[in-house]
Length: 559
Image (tube, rainbow, N blue to C red; front, side):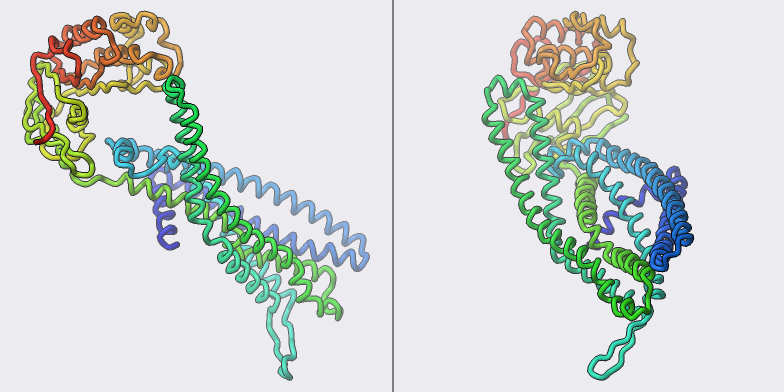
């Protein structure tokens, strides 16, 4: 528990100490605190009105009864205003805190190649859920539980004092010994609340781990459904629906199995909480009945004490009543902390990639590729790609040709050696399947440059030049282009991107594999003609591309 508390506070600290955000954050927090104090005072007032109300009924005092009712509705009206203002202020603080934490974690996730490294090395599952649901729930629970804790402290102080004064001492004769307990009803409420907390903890302590597991299973199921949606065409062509259904059933089986364990734990927790809630109504009545029956206390005082006893017990048993929320907070904190650890700087890479301001070449020295477990993949050795040169990377399948490009990009640290790139060069990598995001075709074509960096006439002509004339008039159309376009259209669009970006160094990994020979030759010739000074390095199996690449780098498996 101390480790989880430390992690929860560590996640919160940046927002509350941020030079820009902290002033308004603390102002909103103080407003919530002030409203919580007002809420406590109003509950105290209602407790006193409760006594006046029942005393007026017992004494058949109509004017006093009417006065109590008028004050009661006034207090309720003020209470509604205070509760509404507190809720609004809490929501305002919630969205500001959530925005700050989201921007910070997403910024770290997208910093450098962190997001790719997490997926490549399997450091953390379902980062998308952690950056959305877990952040939202963490902030909500932190605010809700903090406010509830403060309100309960106020209730404990005020209602406990009412209980101490109102019920007074209780005397007992035990084995001939006269014993007097001052504020006995207060101590009984404290004992009852502590007992409820202990029993609730024993009944539900396994829920923490089960809740974390449930969130992971739910995320895995949702992620797999999203993958099926993304690959719907391929699955339909393979007629793989039955396989996917079996996979879905297996994943949901994990959800259901874990849920049954949660259900069992909730049985114990509900029996404990419900039992205490029902019995708690009778405890103060039984405890105070001797004074009522003797005429020492009035009906109003009895009702006041019952209300104060319930409030005091509730305050002491705050941990028991907040058990599920505390476990939820613990689960969300663990998941966010795991993501933060996964985003920590990686160890020093085996393949070092550096930007050199004193060279225009792409050079490798002693480059050896390996798998993540350390097994050797291939030994490339030395290579030098001069400015404007065109190279083809050849070798048998599985030897690591695409991995070499990942290593040059700094995405594959496994192995050894050094790669040197020109410091100021514009470098672009074209994978076999390019990323096409949702949005307008214009933004998809311009990516990764800023929207608006090219006029529509230029973009339309570029699409025509890349043999996509049917897209030239659809720049404003919004679609999921990764599904809308065929593999060949996607690769032609990628060439258009490269011509628009005008890189100094262009790496292509099977970037024309879905094109016919004529279109492939047309696009490569456009790259040569329009980017004459561009260094081009291609990974390809087709011999038809040899004419465009005078130089060849052979990659072979280690001996």
